[in-house]
Length: 144
Image (tube, rainbow, N blue to C red; front, side, top):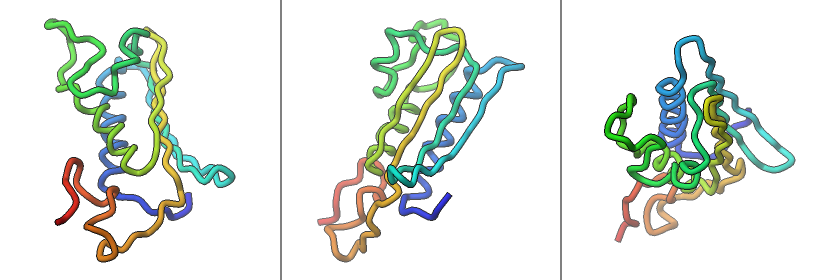
């Protein structure tokens, strides 16, 4: 994996949220894999988390990256959480100019793939109106 420009704290939160969900939704005896790949010909860095958990139904896939949305929104759901984790993954990924995709089959598991450019410019904060969006806390406005 080559060195690339990114906000390491935001990348950590992306991976942490995806791994946390994989652990939460994968039963004992299941498997979880994490991989990182550099696709030099496409100028991309890819992080993939795959699990053999409960999977996500087709109806939930369309909204799973929205804030406060959970695949199981019943009051008796067995899993905790606020429904912010995947929304945060999407927002932080997009701050890096990237995308997050989901492949899932209910009852078989899920694969989340985060793809970000490996060629983000190194921007000097003094030359802009504040920190580069990838270096600014989520939701923080530019400096005045």
